[in-house]
Amino acid sequence: MPRQPRPRQASHQPSRRAFLGAAMASSLVPSVLADEASAPSTTGPAQVVGTVALAGPGSPVVMFSKHLAELGWGDLGTAVRTAGFDGVDLTVRPGGHVLPARVTDDLPRAVAAIRDAGSTVAMLTTGLTRPGDPAARATFEAARAVGVPRLKAGYYRYAFADARRELAEATTAFHALVRLAGEAGVMFAYHNHSGDYVGAPVWDALQMIEGQPSQATGIYFDIRHATVEGGLGGWRAAVQMAAPHLRMLAIKDFYWEKGANGRWRVVDCPVGDGMVDWKAFGAELRAARFSGPMSLHIEYEPGGRTPVEKTERMLAAAVRDRTRLAALLA
Image (cartoon, rainbow, N blue to C red; front, top):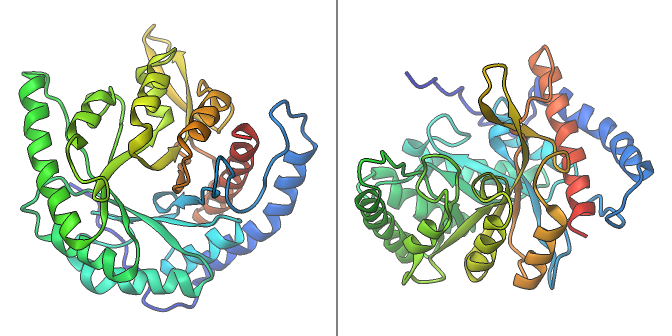
């Protein structure tokens, strides 16, 4: 049974928990950046705040709101701004910061609260996969109304009974959603997730967007998942083929580990501690002249015993990963 989401704050006043988290972020930022600046680097100087310069305009680095799910809208904006991020990748899905059934009423309120806190909403992460979903058109229209033009789709999965047929069915459903997005004037991009997900090899995600209006769809490229599926050269071929269609990036890292049972597993880790070749990825992004938002994900466990301590640790991990990202992509 899916967990019931906590009610979001209608007020713009920060709760005690969020205030403590934001205050801790404020004290953490100088010390974390000092540690990063004093560490030896072979990748060039770190850009510790603001956008990451690749080619042409800089790319805003935003934080995925899933990792601060306990914070209300205004508190989320305060914490993300205090931690030095350019904005928020806001969840609009079951259990998210905005519930799909309330998107028409609550997305404007959420975006206003985040903006009033001095931050922005750069993109929305949805769970939309079916054109018949009553929240689909409402989400696209609400996003357009509040000036957030980039949205991430939900996922389709392979049952591996007939992969060709399953991809065709996913493509038909996705195209119908792209049409709705285009009518609303927003972009609906597909994410390459490793495993049994449609999009894992990236070529299938590219097939899904082939022939569709470029202003209405594209690829939300995830270098972690692309490296899982194509660890040596596959990820690089994928990003080059996806280059004309890159709309947003997911930022995270991982490594392979053999467990006690002798089976290999994927372990998420801080940016720069894993198997992603960030230097080569940065070169590909510069060649593609990418300038869209980069959404930072903290999929590993930063630690913490209490809710407030977990928020503090999460924000500290996010600051470190963002600082490392800027240095590694330089």
